[in-house]
Every structure is written in C-alpha cells, then in structure tokens.
Amino acid sequence: MNNNYDVIVIGSGNAGLSLATTMAQAGKSVALFEKHNIPGGCGTSFCRGRFEFEVALHQLSSMGTNVNPGPLRTLFKEYGILDQIEWVEIDTLFSINLPDGRSVSIPADREKAEKSLSEVFPEEKEGILKYFEICFNFYKEASAFAAKSAQSTGEPSAMKKAIMKMGFPKIYPTLAKYGARSTDEVLAELFKGKEIQLCLSAYWCFMGVPPEKFPFSILAQCTAIYISDKPYYVRGGSQMMSQALTEAIRKAGGEVKFNCGVDKIIVENNVAVGVIDENGVKYTANQVVSNISPTMTYNRLIEKENLPEGVIDYFKNYEVGISALTCFIALDCTPEEIGFKDSFNLTYNSLDANGDFKNAYCLDSKIDPIVSTCYTVDDKDGYPAGTSVLTAGTLKFSEAWEKLTPEEYYDAKYAAANDIVDRLEKFYPGFRSHIEEIEVATPLTHMRYLGHPGGSIYGYEQNLKSSVFFFPQETFIKNLEFASGWVNTCGFGPNYLYGNKVAKKLLSEV
Image (tube, rainbow, N blue to C red; front, side):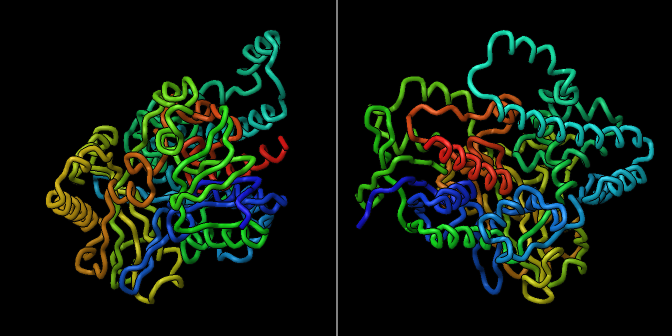
C-alpha cells in the first residue's frame, strides 16, 4: 500500500474538497482524510422520517448565470461537476420581519431593490440609492485592489509604500473611506430610521457578529455579489456539491478516506512531512493542508515540543466565533399555507439588534434575531409534495451550554426551540400545528459533529480586527497550509474559491 503522497488534506469541508480537487486534477497524488462517514463538514444533510434536512446552506453566492458566469460557476465547470448539479436561482435576497409586524422583501436585482425599498421607506430614498452605489463601487474597487495586489511580488520598497499610502485614497476612494468602518457606523450616516438599517444589514448573521461589530466591507461586498451573481440553492442540498467534488477527486486519481481522522501531524525540523491517522497508520507527504481550525491543528495535532515560537501568542489575537441553536423543521403543509413567501428570512424582536444579540450568551431564545430558511419556497420538487422543510435558529455562544448537566441540557434545548416556534407563530399563523418533524441542534451538537472549538460555525470572529485584510493566514511550519473559513471569509462560495486559490499557490511553488 502506497502511503506517500504529494498532498495530504485534513478534513473534507468546502475548501478542503476544492483544494483536493484542484491538486488531483493537476496530476498530484492526493489523500483526503475525513473522520465522518460523509464529505462536506457543514455542507451535508441528514434524514428524519420522510424528510432530508439541509445542515447549513442558506444561499450560494458567486454563481452568476450561463450568459454571465460568476467565479464559482466557472470553477465548478473546470472541475467537471457543473452539469451534475441542479441549480435553483433565487429571486429575493431576503425578507425582514420587523418588530411592528411588517415584512420587507428585497429583490435580487439592484433597480428592483432600490424601487421596492424606496416605496416602503420613501423618506429614505436618497440614502437607499447612495447605499447601493457605495456597495457596488466598493466591490469594484476591492476586486481591482485584490487583482493589483496579486500582481505584486516581493516586499515593496519604502518609496513604493509611500506612494501607495498617498495614492490609495485617489485610486480607491470608496475602499479608503469605508474599508475600516462598521456596518452600524455607515448605515447611521446614510439613514435616519432603524427599520431601514435593519433591512439592509441582514448579512451580519452570515458572519455571526452584530451590526456594531460587523465590517461594512463584508456587507458591501455581500450585497453587490449576491445581486450581481444572484443567490442560488442546490436541488437536493449542499450534500450534492460535497458528493460531486468527492467523486471528482477520485476520478482524477485522488483518495478520500472516510471514518479516518488524523491523530497527529508529523513535524521534523519545523517542516510538516506527513500525518498519523487515528488507527496509528503513518503517511508521508510533500505538503500537508489543514481544513480544520488552526486552534485544533496546533493544539491537538502537533506535539508540544514541535510548536513554533510565537504561534500560540499569534492566535490569541483571534477569538473563536459564535455557534448556533438550530431547529430543523418539517411541516405537513405548503409554504404558502402559513405565509412563507421568501426562502431566507430574518425576524427581529426589537429595533436594537445589537442589544438583542447579547442574548446569544443566554440559553433562551426569547429575543435573539431568528434566521429561518424555508427551502421548499425555491425547491418545491426536492421535497415531499404538500410539505415545507426549513431551518430556524438563533446564534448562540457555547459557554452556557457547556455548563449544563445532561438533564438540564435536554430541558434547555427544547425550551429554546419552543421560544423560536412561539415567535415564528406570530408571523406565520398555524406554524406550530403543522409541525411533523423537528430536530434541535445546539452549540454542543455543532462541536460534536464539526470538531470546532466552541461549536463555531463561522471560524474565528469576523470582526473589524480579524477579517478582510486581517485574516490569520500567517504560516509557522513549512509545508503546512490552511484552507477553510478559519483563515478566510466564511461561507460556501468563498471557501470553494479559497481552496482553489491555495491549491494554485502550492502548484506554482513546485
């Protein structure tokens, strides 16, 4: 048996799968290790009764259309999996359930979004038009800056740095003005009312930080990308992408080892040279890539005496991100019967999203913003006829859950789920009476299945100090790289693309 490879990948999350696919299709010998019995990490599904539940995907970004393909559609075409998957285009970005009972839907089209929001908030029309102009300009400048930076090689001279410092605001004015500001700060500058600010800031929940800490740079780019490339869902759920990538790896000659986690990374003279799996089998490689968190990688997989100086202090600057309490719910009625018109919905308890977010440290879900996605709205053919399948949950930190006894845990878990159902009942009358199946996941559930510290679903906290230009991408051990949402913008699209980017970097260095 050959136990020597060009590349070993630890973990089959989105970036791990795309990286392994790129390397295998480039002719490299690849071994992907996964402790679970299925690929995907968060990109998986599970069954209860007659229903299959999506674990994590709300909307897929960066797809674009056949006529104007986005970067992810282009990548999946290169991988040969584009036509193996049914793509469902979504017409709306999201719907906001405001505390006063109104629901505001935002179309996935710039002109329609501007028109629709201006009709709901006529007094805010000027700010609405300016907001979308800022978002699209920001995205355009950020893309240009990233392309320019990718062309640069070596350490810039003092003169070049000085020119860059003086010229940056002129070349990238939107980036310079808004790049280091919070969502709250920018939206408060543009709008008078809190309602419109709640409607436009919804993507904060995709990163797990409240608007006061959510980088406007991420909001601006999310808004522009989802409108330009359209949001998509995958018929059959994200497991379809995970499985298609797994088969692409195998077709290209790579190996995928399920039920086979890695117990140790072998480091010799500060160089990663292989791994030992949980069965004690040793494998060697020219390159090791971790698709799990740097926290777990350095603390669990590398012997203490082999830890590089400064690595622990470096990661102390990054806080483990938030987890979630998620209800997986199947209803014995159609979405229309109880009022679900849009697939992705955000329900607010009050106009103070930052204050309500603080309940994430508590066990109950009485005031937390609720994220709910009704997949049947966009994918009626993918589920039993006359039913609805959805997830509904709140963002939660793990600490309070970790302190519970087994008996307390059971009670707290279903009490919090009951809070969510009660609150959704107010916006979707009849919701409770139509529940056929419900499964509840807590931060401890996510910790168990993902192996993430704190059950984090977004990697390290994506705040102003640890995202965008400040991701923890520094390497400390030669031939050990990272590829995941822990070192990049979290999310499905961003991490498929990032895994490919890291793979191309490694290929260029050979």
